[in-house]
Amino acid sequence: MIDTTSNDYADEDAGDDDDDTEDLVPTLVARNVHVRYNSHADRDPSTSLLRMRRKNVPRGSRAEVHAVRGVSLTLHQGESIGIVGSNGSGKSTLVTALSGLIELSEGEVLATSRPALLGVGAALRPKLSGRRNIMLGLLALGLSRAEVNNRMKAIIKFSGLGDAIDRPMATYSSGMRARLAFTIATEVAPDILIIDEALAVGDRDFRARAANRLQEIRDAAGSMIVISHNLSEVASMCNRVIWLEDGEVVQDGEADTVLANYESANPSPKKAEKRMKRRAMRRRIRAREREKALEWAIENVDGDIAIPPDSTAPSGPAASEQAADPAPRPSDGGVA
Image 1 (cartoon, rainbow, N blue to C red):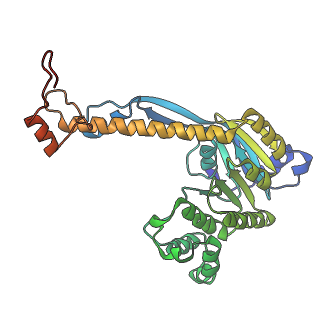
Image 2 (image 1 turned 45 degrees about the vertical axis):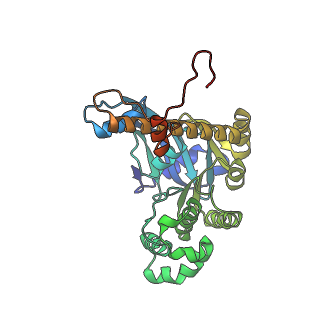
Image 3 (image 1 turned 90 degrees about the horizontal axis):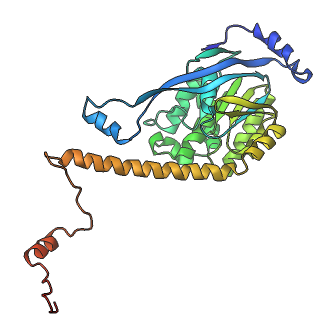
């Protein structure tokens, strides 16, 4: 839970930093943050299908996942912090905890206001049009209906959605949804903005507009935390970077230094990420094949072991003709 009711921590934490930041006002302080959750691991993906059909199929082994391990950080007014790390290092879990959307297992988070979390999965209503989502989103951020109507034309132009703004969100691509979510979240400059890979989508023009808007937020003394696998993007947007692995802080310091160390430890992060995506795709394909075979067996078994039909065997009229008129076999010493 985030405490936004007290600023007593500001002087205490600001005094602990270097001389360069001693005059800056902290907007968010995280102390010894731990996040744990329980997960049931199924060794065979097909057991999930069986469990839906039969009540006596046991669940997989219960395991505790320690996603974030004792992370502490202080975000100051006007500061931009980038967070880098490999997939599964706990980056998204950490910022979700900092925004107050999940409960901490240990530690505390103090903030001057509730952080606004912007991710590729930002909450939008898929059955409503983009225009209606803009209206609802900005009303939730405190604008009046008249203010939203006055800004609507400029908001639609910034998003670049054009005529698609009046179509249901369910028809949007992931890039279109991310552009609209970013537009809504940054129309009213938040004191603390957390961006989780939300800038990884969109065309070049929109990225340029987004970069300009983020600079305006920084100029207005807003604070940002940015997660991205695009290291050049992190370097251009952030003056400080935290390197996270296995839920722990490996290094926290100036952007150039931390990014150089991260790149040296991960020579080809893009290639490694592509390999991981290919492996994950192959695993999903194999899992789907096993589930289809198991589903067919469950539906067709009748006391005996069911053999899936041979997709290469002839079927229909051709099969009937072949059964009625089998091919002659060559006799001993003769020719067929």
